[in-house]
Image: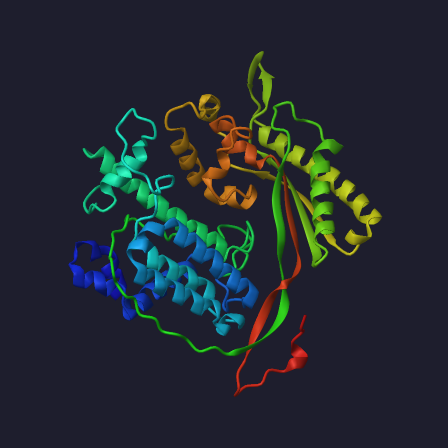
Length: 456
């Protein structure tokens, strides 16, 4: 593919190749390439992408524009024609009525187009806007911003992301790559996520990963000042809209993580009950149809005495699952009582279940109780641990990033970060959201039967 070859070699080409990157053909190739990677990430891709309401599309484009322009403000300042084209292209998507029909590709196109524009740019380094060089040891000196000033316009081609002999440039390059990938992940969450569990472009799956995200960029970017990208508008069809059932709310409510946790009481169920009641009362414009509450217990060990010695109980998993089942039974009784006494909940279907969740326990995990934020490389160890168990963190604990495990008040060491997120109740609330419309195309040559379409 023409775009792929440019993707890997354009840093070494002359000004002609730089001009070529921002061309109508390359833009088309780039968007197709990114859309394909997004769609291939789904375990079960929706055959036809759902419609996007005009209000939602405009809001999504506005958030995308704001995010990209803020994070790449200096690059856009030096490339005003690129910024103009970026704004025109996103405005076109915002006004594109094809987005209001089933089968559109607007979400994937919006994300792919955005990546195409900032793929060649270096993001602003946080806290360094307007920074002027200051001698070391003087007030206002910032080591990170000094590195940014030194290398901002320098070519980093051939510099490894590790610190092999070039600590400043190597660190800066690694930093730029992280900033760029952070932008892509932020946009992914804004554009493609329905909620913390589901994506607009993927069907839900019984088990396994819903979507394998793999759009990380590995180049820090360089400046192509004065380029003038092309702009090609698209035609807009008519649309007609109905509502659709979606996940309205998802949250994980933690419970006690102490070894002595062997009883279930109202204090553990109360936060779940309050969350559900408050959500229903606070969202009268939503029609709640189903509420699922899963009581989960992590695979942490219990101690027992065998032969006069204190050892790890080989039946720890059985005891943990029993605890989860006890919590689920208690929750079921409480929620059924609430349902019978609350008219707003009377028509809602409740499901309560129990599960053993989280990574398997290993004897060596006991040592990680001493691995805290004060331990060198703590962030890297948390990230590595999360990556090793990413699927279950996302599905069972609703943790979508290793950054979710760095709250010092919640997780004081690596052991807790590994197991504590799976100790508690997972809530899913589904129903209808009236402001989100599912739209059908009405062409001049093919009239849709209105008696098969319900309007809001």
